[in-house]
Image (cartoon, rainbow, N blue to C red; front, side, top):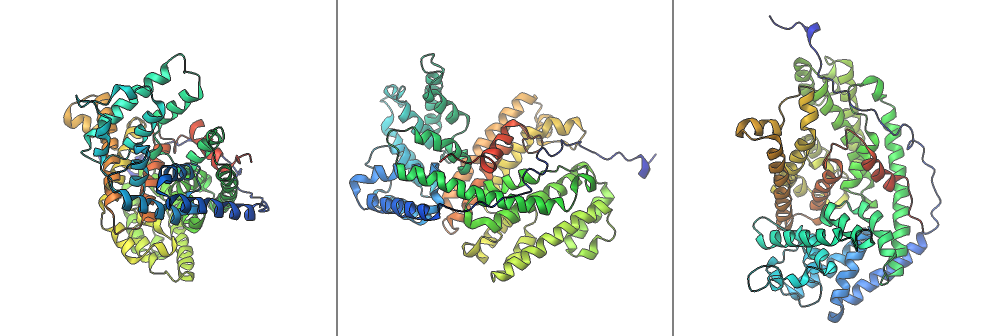
Length: 509
């Protein structure tokens, strides 16, 4: 006997409510008293980069300076200088680095998209082909090599071996009773929990600034610039979040769409993760709104709509006209109006910049990644969008990574509410393996996907670095939002502390 419409039970998920309330709604503009100081410090650091670049005997110091700049979260001040310096190092040395700290050289060049061979690490092996035991207590050497291994690409067995070796040695050191409660043990523990390559740059700055401040070799100008720069940029981020919250509040989502996740702050955090730099403000605000809208759409499909309603909703989106929403339920009409108004606003912004053609690409990209490139300025061209919309391997590898991490942490909750079979469930049924074995396999798939992301990142020679870095940062955002738990849906202390550290707590200067 067929189900009557009244008998249909909607797949409501009962998502937890928003935890922030109106905390970020009001923004009090603080007077910028430090801009002249910041400019003077920028000039000083810029000169130091160029001076050390032009002195071959200072090239190891140059790499250490660039590493500090990046980890302190102020590389956006020196994008041209850093690129020039690392291109120079690559041109001068190729694969044959002759300075100290080979692991740092290797990591920085690969992070810049410059491929150098991992064969350079063979010099650290003994005659039996194993990593030399003489290094097992050299914490600085181990940490540098450990971080370098996460720039590996498929087929680099030597880096897989190096990762195993350094992980074991560092674990032994951190568990030693003599060093267990030391700052050294803390540094090792943080590295093993999340390697540098997978960290969001802004969160790394929060962690690294107080650590760098304690170093006897610290550069005082660099430290001061990092603190002032962090607070100045945080002020911009808080202003943007206030605008997002005001925009979101007008839709009264808790009452009009009670089945959906109400996550404006988390959506802004996600956008900030993809690009935190000040010159991407318009892109960041637009993407935050789009993530918010995408969340509403996802929850409408997964946790509310009937098949017939969703068919009409899908057709309305394809037609891309406000009149197409006439036959939709009221809640779907609201989502459709948000979608239309969002793109009208973006069209106005892009028209002012003389880039109205971007909107056609963005509409085509609604389910995909190219919307991240909206309003990024002159760095984005026709070719950029065509690349993004033609299934580039870099984007595909990132999507595989994201989908797999999502499957791992949402599997149990979705099965409990009789959702469609997850990737985990499908794999278990198809191959007759248990849940734990499947989790282990999927976690390996995540690591393999990171290798693919790294490899494709370094082969995208015709795509500008600011574009490919958005893909890298999106992958990094998953390491915060979907590592071991669905933090986006079930916001706990871990994500709450991350958000507060970037959008509430200033760095003490």
